[in-house]
Image 1 (cartoon, one colour):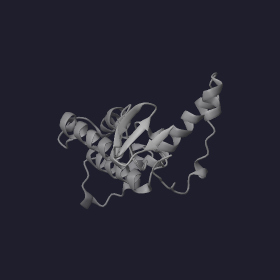
Image 2 (cartoon, helix red, strand yellow; image 1 turned 180 degrees about the vertical axis):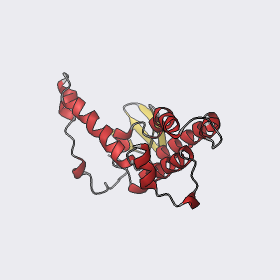
Image 3 (cartoon, one colour; image 1 turned 90 degrees about the vertical axis):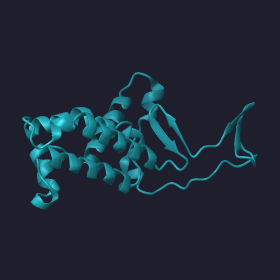
Image 4 (cartoon, one colour; image 1 turned 45 degrees about the vertical axis):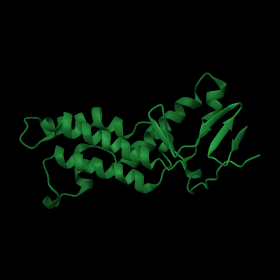
Length: 180
């Protein structure tokens, strides 16, 4: 049983825990309201670091790699960082997923050696790269995850796998635990 105490402690059994704004669990940053803003911002920062520190020499304009190889590097090394645990943050606010999409657009511009003033649309870049939008890619991963869960041998896992993306069109209200 959870109990909220005046001095911001949560009691669970005989143990006290300090209430925190966010906590990192298995690489996912869970915040108090489950908005996943901090998790997505952190993922973008890590992907940015990987792209521009480790792989910048491969992505820059004067490199011998062609655009398809650069897109392949993005798919293999950078996109998994951005979409890690997307089954959990799938229903976050559209603005948070848009941040990931903007980052992907920047990487595609690097891959095809284009600038913002070259007047090439993001849709054109995505079609050249044969790369789906982040929203579509995340939906594909989430649907695959739940389809695998539904056919799982364990009854507990298969019973949890009922998923309908249309059910989550509204935001949930958050309330603090109430002292009993």
